[in-house]
Length: 500
Ligand code: N01
Image (tube, rainbow, N blue to C red):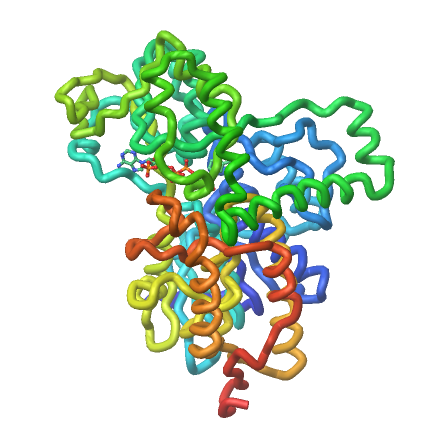
């Protein structure tokens, strides 16, 4: 009989992107040194490591899209591109020595709650070897945008050319002169298409729903600005604060007063008017839902690319794919050498949910299948003791930096660990009542939001049409809600001892 090696650790962190790295740093800073980070990839960065498609960049300004405790005076542009963000994350990890406690190339196949010992048992595979990690606390930090979603299109499997998902790019594939199809017109596609449009022979862009797009005010920083960011005390904080405040005003429109988004719509319409001369094309790129219902995109080169003679915007739906072509509903065959799938991610139906088993062995997928993706303060889930989910249910944003939300969760996580450690608590489970009340409060706020009433379908909604991904309202209210670990919302006990 083969005995499996078990590694014991106090805190297991799965995922080494912004949130997993942030968790490791905050734990170390607060004296919780017995942690282990695991990630299937080869370095830090998560989504910013995996999304290497041409043009990948952030649509939150650089100074806000970074840790408040690791500000970067050296950002080269007002909006950062993927290689620079990836580098930043790895630099921060190195500065804090997190690599020493991180296992890369490690796939976590399953995580199961062990009621007898009040621990999580993780079945992992590292360098081809199966083993287990046993941890008192589990921090799930894989992020919501990690599992590519392939569209359910007849014949897609039979395509004989090259097929790439935006988040699984092949840097070696040469698009020069090729006939290429891009499926999707979301945040990823609008960055990919202008880059491909420069090199391909012909590009077909398959649009199911036109997105709202505002101009992107990106520019390189001047050396004098970088000098000032580095040397003028408080300047970066001032900039972060300014961007943060401006973004929060959009939150009000999205959640409480959708009419307040009218100026944003006017900006988008002016962007279309300026970018596209052809009336018929203008009509096809003009969205028919309320601005803000889906993520508002930022681009200066999307519309100009659609005007190019080598680019076609195809709005007749895709009927099927053959070995060498995309066939549209109007019966036209569009021959292609490569298909780029930019259809997003499994967010509310992530396969990761099947791999986490809580009390009684029920998986997160089974539990959420019944009640929808819900949790408490975006972090803890009833039925899954001692497990904190970073960017968990109801923490997503349509208007500002996720790093702010992550840092709020980190406050909560650290206070949870301090509270339970000092009281000798080994099992902490949010009560069903606390979770239900919290969820009901969110759904109440959401009922007037543009995400619900804006007339669109989006990845913000689950299969029942409920918004379980987004935080409704201002992010400072999430910061306030997570400032202190409110142990009274939890059932707590110590190993071998009844509920205390
Ligand atoms: O994915 P999406 P994404 N046939 O789900 C279409 C973040 N991000 O990867 O709108 C044809 O938004 C779908 O059409 P429709 C950001 O949070 C950020 O682009 O459903 N089309 C849509 O057009 C973002 O929101 C950045 O009708 C199909 C597209 O595919 C999130 O990641 C950059 C289809 C999917 O859009 C996801 O963005 C990139 C089908 N069967 C990503 N199925 C920045 O910071 C889907 N579609 C800039």
